[in-house]
Image 1: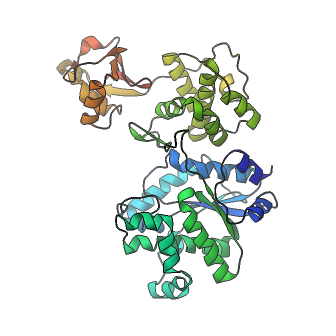
Image 2: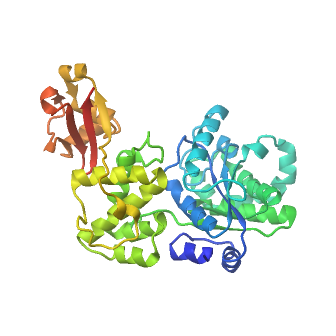
Length: 423
């Protein structure tokens, strides 16, 4: 596999420090490369997936991933793409988040001897001595160049702390350490990381006279230029306790027609020719393409069994796009048969039902709304259904008569569903 060509053909490349060198190195002998994640939460979300998917491609081509968890840089906070300073976390919170992220990364990247490794920049950043760091590293940075960086210019309008201003130095120092200690030649990151990547390339060259290179991946946006990765309920997380597997599947299944091809390119391993064929389909064909996208993306994040269960639950509820299997695909979705699955479930007690459960509270507690206020707005907007009947009264209480065999279906919008069960 020519890794550079694959990344380019599938839409992963945006900015490169030197296109010809990057192409030759990634299409040539194996190199070590790294991508980094600051553990500011206990889960990754869809917005983090692009560099991970690119790392999978590079690993399959024989290159060696170094997956960096920023236990040190998370104590500072990256100002890139942020309008305000990040909330400061304790070292204990950061460590717990880092442990959770390491587990999630292992679903996508193969770790082990001579394969991928995982490192934490807390190991070399937390022991730095401030004055020595300023003398040895700070002397290589121009304040004028740092102020010209887009991420800094945007924050100067709302206020940038001196703490955050130092972030670029720390990330650049990461690249230097990885080049020196782990023979790392290449960094890959999101579009908003371009300034930090260039700083690391320059610092490494200055400190150890070693040429390294980097590239960024474009922001994940839809055909209208809007960022992809959030729903009405908030970010789409990889942690099933934050975003259920069913809701994760439904996020991808609800993709706009115009974006199916692009997302299949980025979030599946299907051949390019097949993706182009699926993306060009119409009517039931494009809905089948969305089913395939949802299954492939969910299988990658949660495993084939969980993806099959989500697919079956969704199709039992909303119908199959291609019940006769007329649309050809190499996706393993064609092998799913007889899988039993259920919709995401929210349990209520018999005592609560007997007393009556306020519909607004039930929507919020079940995860179909972010808050009581959000639930009220959804009801008033005509977007909530109980057992496929529209809920019109925000003061309605759900009682025993609303259940059949101890179950009821609650829905927000077209495809956000909860099975309400009396325990």
